View 1: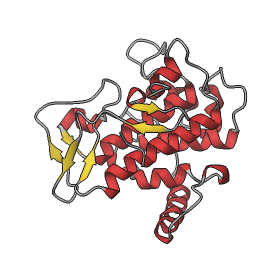
View 2: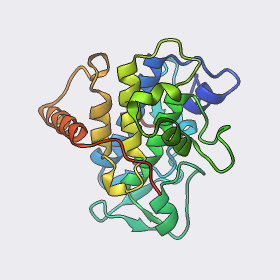
View 3: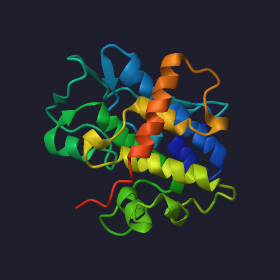
Length: 234
């Protein structure tokens, strides 16, 4: 696509030109793409390689989830399936998938949480954080998982960043990368939580989506940031 991938836009030679509003919009559009795979397809599809380089941007900087070479149908009502080998990109792979080789839609949710941290920080998944430290470990340690401290990890190239939105995006990312997959939200909940701010909320919501939105608000109120641990497709 004309504007390449999100990874190139954030980390390439010409990177650093995406403003905050555009980043937030891209986050919602990519989440909608994954939501379609998980909740509107039958059988549901797990992408298995969600990363910033697989989110492409068209001439209007609309985000499209791309590269389905590793995608997997989950036939039996979405139940997890055991793979013969690990597939995906280093750093974005959910811990339970690496340990058990079992794949389900929560693997994609974890990877998407990584992408959200890239949007917030402007950092690659493995940056100058120290040996053996990735963006998740660095973000948790630097903020102590407190959304109020998200400014400590914010992209320094951004001049205008609404604090409430950056804290919210960080909150959602922490939910997505929870080590316990059961504690991660579904992608439809992610979409609705990201759409919480008025100028980011979809113009038209069906009654069912409004219900999901209210559920996601309740979900947000009931959850705290995880503590430090030991239709947009092409």
